[in-house]
Image (cartoon, rainbow, N blue to C red):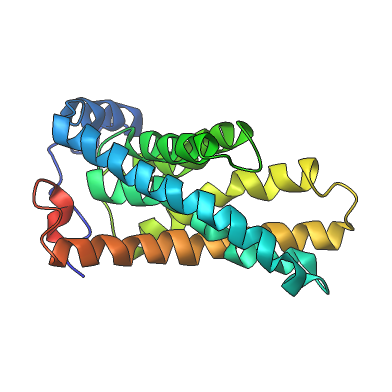
Length: 212
C-alpha cells in the first residue's frame, strides 16, 4: 500500500502548537494542479452525491423495519473530504473538496437544497482536523479511518436533531453509530484504497500520494 508517512522535519521537543505552525508554513503554497485536482475530485463526487440522493430515497423501503440501519450506506456522502485530503495532502484540501462536492450536488438539484453546502463544509473541516492532528505527515489506513469517522460526526448529530427528533433515543444512537461505521468503512477504508489504486495507475504523479 506504500508509505503512510512523510519524512519528519527538524523540531526536536518543541511544543505541539509551534510544530503545527512550522508545518503549516511548509505546506502553505498551493500549486495550480493542487487546486484543479481538488476541484475535479469535488465535482466528480458531487455528481455521485446527486445520484446517491436518488439511491437513498429508493432504498428507504428496504429499511422500513429498522430505519436507522439505512445510515450504513451514508459513508458515500463523507468521501470527498477524506479523499481530497489523502490525494492532495495540503491544508484545506479536505474542506475545498467537500464544499465543491456539496455545491455541485446542490446545483444539480439535491433534495436537501443548499443545506448540503453547510454540511459539506463541516464534513470537510472535521477530517481536516484529523490530518492536522498528524501534522499532514501520516496518510495510512488508520488515519484515513479516523478521518472518515470524524466526517460522520456532524450528520450523526445534526440529522437526528433536524430530521429524526421523534425517534426513540435508541434509534437515534444506532443511527449515529451506523454513520460513524459507514464513514470509517466507505470514506476511510474506501478513500485510502482508492488513493492507492490511483497511485498504482500513475494518476497521482504530481502529488506525494503517488507513492501510495
